Image (cartoon, rainbow, N blue to C red; front, side, top):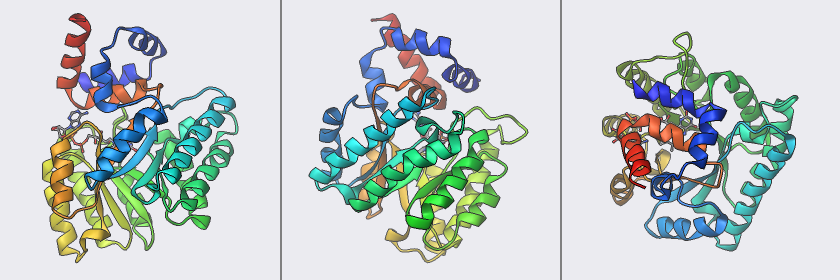
Length: 307
Ligand code: FAD
């Protein structure tokens, strides 16, 4: 029951001000967002890649209110890509972007987001890596998929995310499961109404398996974004049945969640990519992580009280 309440709070400006200003234990936020600057994050990138893991980087931020903030977001990604080039880590590290951070919700936002994300995709391609467009709430998805399609004309490796909890996703998966496409499947992290999304965990899990089957049997490159041990085992089974080799799909998990599992899958020869978020505008990302697991919230509240 707590999850929806926390997700509602994740969109509240008042809660954002309260929680961001609270003496939040750095330790709790750091577990999921292990740095604020490129300088903080570079040692983490080096450590994870040295362990045989790959990464996808999220400069945290979303729901911006001015075009200038969108330009700042674009520049933050460009600076990161510049660092990756100097470190010669381009091939191991891709970018994840939220189009709302690139201006998607502003006036003329679709064009603005496309104009801001294109240079990031170009810069990523120039160092041998790529960008995946994260999926945000359902109202943003038609625009996200249109931008994805547009970017793929010049950069076919550009990936996108689909969310198992949405009724529309099986149809999206069929459209996207074509040669050359890269699609990350996740359960979905936003508070969505019953008109558009499954609400029960068992329904979402079943939908995840249906969509996973479509992706595995298709011709694209599936990216399994989940920490759920049952779904990971099913993904391995479906990949095997579809005759996929280990480099024809990959697993992805979030930094700070089931770290041992990251290493176990990598040691088994799987491609394992760690979604690593950093930056100062961590509120929305952090709240979604709290909503996913009530125990995180208890730990968070305890650390605020004992501070
Ligand atoms: P769950 O059933 O939620 O979790 C399975 C197990 O994993 C839990 O029992 C627990 O042990 C562990 N676990 C899961 N979450 C947490 C947590 N927060 N803290 C501690 N332990 C936890 N969602 C979107 O809507 N759009 C996106 O673009 C998007 N990108 C993502 C990218 C990646 C790489 C991943 C892994 C997730 C992404 N998500 C995204 C979030 C996703 O939708 C889920 O909310 C999240 O992954 C939890 O679902 P789960 O599949 O891990 O299963």
